[in-house]
Amino acid sequence: MPGRAAVTAGRLVDRYGRVARDLRVSVTDRCNLRCTYCMPAEGLPWLPTEDVLTDEELIRLITIAVQRLGVQEVRFTGGEPLLRRGLERIVAATTALRRTDGQPPATSLTTNGLGLDRRVAGLVRAGLGRVNVSLDTLDPERYAKLARRDRLPGVLAGLAAARDAGLTPVKVNSVLMRGLNDDEAVPLLRWALAEGYRLRFIEQMPLGPRETWDADSMITGQEILAALSEAFTLTPVTGRGADPAQLWLVDGGGASGQDTVGVIASVTRPFCGDCDRVRLTSDGQLRDCLFARRETDLRGMLRGGADDQEIAQAWTAAMTRKAAGHGINDPGFLQPGRPMSAIGG
Image (cartoon, rainbow, N blue to C red):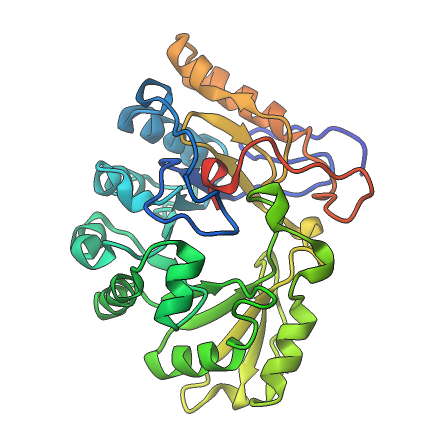
């Protein structure tokens, strides 16, 4: 019942009855792009190396989550996770684990795609299941302006390599911004369908520099759908569950029936009531929400000699404090103290 703390052994249950089964693991806060909606042009002060969890520490926390706390899916994020040298080792250790149902945890990677073509073979050998690649424009000049780096060919090469290596469906995450790339909804979808990628549009959220987000100028999910509907016939897909994206079949789904587009309307149509996520930052801080302003220090417990059961109990207790929603639309909303690159997607 809402408002009553719930602690269930072996599961991460909050006081609203939501069960966290999806762990987002940030493996680094560093990034090789400087996207305008994520960080300032000069970048951010990176975490000192000694503050970042080691491979062994990350693997231990993931093991606790999967084997003791009911986590079924692990997504690796950053910053840019491909900057983590030990990523293949961490992925391999994760896919070697077994959930309570005897199956390995589902694994995925959210990346900007740079360098993916060079590392995809090793990640596949490690057992990685799928990738999401961030790409907001197909125009090289716009890409260089938005990312402050002229790297579009590298992103496209990474996408193609992931598809050819069998990490399907390869998902592409796009943020449309008014006056910058808001005319690219239809071109992006045409391109994604032609290349065999699954496109998902995401409403811009207040997670970057404070001056870069304005709710009134944000491109909403409804606006995106209106633009797409001028060129395509969209049919809603039912059975969304905990998936943040509402899906639509495009022109009936195509010959294979698999052609879809997704819209993640985190601001205008929040899905907090179905959230099944928990987040671990690269410096070992547990976050029950992307917009949380409170963290639980698991790194301190690791390095202080706590055993696995003590860490599992602290993790379970922390989840009982999860709020009902992110509160973006509340009058007193405050952005989290950390930027997106230091939280993980």
